[in-house]
Image (tube, rainbow, N blue to C red):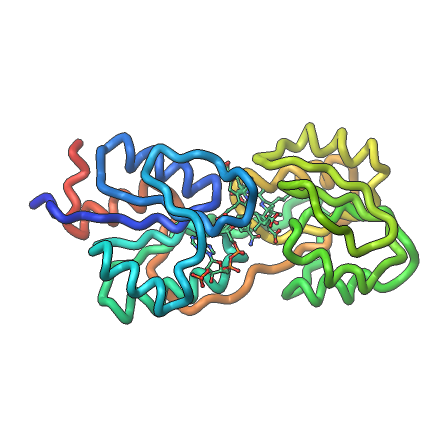
Length: 254
Ligand code: 3Y8
Ligand code: NAP
């Protein structure tokens, strides 16, 4: 397999699986850049050259791809990072650049789970109408404001960074970054007398602690389905991405 001397891989990161891929790519000495949006104060360091911040929409990403002569884009962002994924599809079509998405399968309810599903964040807000409950709202900081429409509840919020402002009157804040375990989340939810868990269907292992804890504690989960994205080539594991790279001309050096 001829080595694409000018191989230059752009990994759109921010997930556990993106980090595993970054380690595998770095171990093979491939030329790659890891990209963060810059959402949190101190993103985890990566074993690859790293850029932080938006590209400036599709136009900005296309310009970046051309300027840096990117040869392959791996969209390993979170399934709810829909705008980034849409931009990657458009920019790679625009520049004729190979694109693959690293997407972990959605979680499926299993025996002992008590899920009710909604299609999006707004649907979750509507589903919280009714008498006050103690709710573990573990959907991050970006969507807190919309949940202020249901101020009657007592919220347990888990955030990556100290919040500047909490839009609801009754809330406890835990500042923590995952991956989270079922055992730790069971202890947290027991300590806070949680009655309902609100979760995005993130998939993967890093966010599923609260789902396993809810099953073990017999608690209901309000599960938010992931946004629907245009079709693109998808892999479910970092190894599948490495195979894709090998089949698109990259000598993995093994
Ligand atoms: C900046 C980069 C690893 C990767 C860690 C994964 C797992 C732990 C679980 C809960 C749910 C939530 C949130 C979550 C998890 C992993 C992974 C994951 C959920 C970091 C990170 C960045 C972000 C951004 C952040 C969002 C927020 C979402 C917190 C790094 C730590 C709730 C998603 O304050 C903010 O603005 C936070 C914003 C986007 C969603 C939101 O709407 O608030 N992730 N999370 C990335 C960037 O700048 O490009 O420092 O590592 C990464 C991880 N967070 O193994 O180390 O792979 O999913 N991230 C959700 O699933 O609902 C927490 O608390 O149970
Ligand atoms: P988003 O809503 O899809 O993207 C909004 C804008 O943020 C994008 O248009 C892009 O700006 C910029 N952006 C997003 N991801 C980027 C990346 N990896 N590198 C460079 N720019 C990026 O994204 P989001 O939901 O805010 O997620 C932001 C980051 O957090 C992503 O890395 C994602 O993987 C990670 N994350 C998100 C969640 C979640 O629940 N959403 C959970 C865990 C981790 P421009 O248009 O200017 O290019």
